[in-house]
Image (cartoon, rainbow, N blue to C red; front, side, top):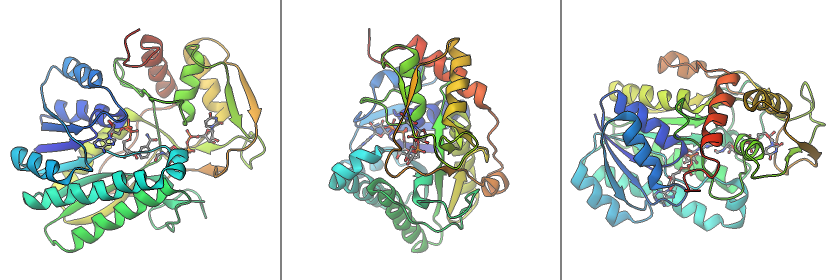
Amino acid sequence: MDVLLTGGAGYIGSHTLIELLACGHRIHVADNFANSSPEALNRVRSLSNRDFAFSRADVRDRAALIALFQEFRPEAVIHFAGLKAVGEGEAKPLDYYETNVAGTMNVLDAMNAVQCRRIVFSSSATVYGEPEYLPIDEAHPLRPASVYGRTKHMAEQIIADWGRARPEASGALLRYFNPVGAHESGRIGEDPHDVPNNLMPYISQVAVGRRAKLSIYGDDYDTRDGTGLRDYIHVADLARAHVAALDYAAAHQGVEAFNIGTGAGFTVHEMLRAFSEACGRDLPYEVTARRPGDVAACVADPSKANRLLNWRAERGLPEMSRSAWLWQSGNPNGYEAL
Ligand code: NAD
Ligand code: WQD
């Protein structure tokens, strides 16, 4: 299939790109490198031994997107491009609405211009907000508690409305839980440009000496050891979910949401222990106050994706931490040269 990836140079995009190339899809990546590096794409080329097209493009630029789509004429789009830092979204809400909401509308407009009817969208478990029950299935109420979460919810609704207006259209809204880990080669991985917001990249940077210690945001939650519990999913499993979603979109009409998680949760202490085993030493931490907006536990019910996408997460916690450590230890400064 001819597939256009917005944000394909990013963490999840680059891992998905490798899977798509291995399956023989023809790819065009569009990215403005707002939070990624051209080096990620170079490494994908050498790891996969396959080529793909690239355009430096911004999803906020509707005219440029339409021109790009008219040149490549994709049969499907995987729309990863977006801003994802929850705290930054509160400080710069308009930037988040512009990139995540208006950017998604521009992508749909460009698809319309070339009669492209299939989209796989990077949504997030954050659209559910405070869990009312666990595990969370797709029928759980959608009450996002942040600007970032609301942009993802709005983009989902826009895609669903776009799909309703076109009976032949298909869309898969993939609600990722907590993606972690790296490619088994350790050559590509997560490389946040700023201080990491997320747990696993923060622990990795402590392990490699870039940060002094991990702050554990509260140990008085109602979980088995008092620290926050999340459904961590290996990025390679997440990448395979996109391939499955593309196949699903090719064979079905309508827009559907899918939880992409494992169905199991781990606490912060468990994540730290697993990472310490992977890197061979105990890592320093201190327990600090709770982070505003955090919930005690968040776990997916992934049975809809298991059933309809014929996909399930296969990799466990040891593989998540081993691969993250292989990536971080081999690339202590990410894609930046030493
Ligand atoms: P990332 O920042 O590594 O990747 C996003 C990519 O989009 C980057 O390459 C960035 O340069 C690009 N981009 C940003 N703004 C752009 C613009 N205006 N035009 C073109 N490209 C632009 O993030 P990621 O973790 O790979 O996330 C990919 C998608 O998945 C995002 O939409 C994110 O919101 C969503 N998501 C991520 C997580 C997570 O924890 N990583 C969880 C749920 C959902
Ligand atoms: C996990 C656990 C923290 C950092 C966020 C977004 C969500 C989605 C995934 C994009 C929590 C604890 C963390 C640290 C800590 N992203 N923690 N010290 O909050 O589940 O979800 O990323 O869509 O939208 O909200 O993930 O990795 O930030 O936190 O103790 O330095 O680790 O309190 O319990 P979260 P996270």
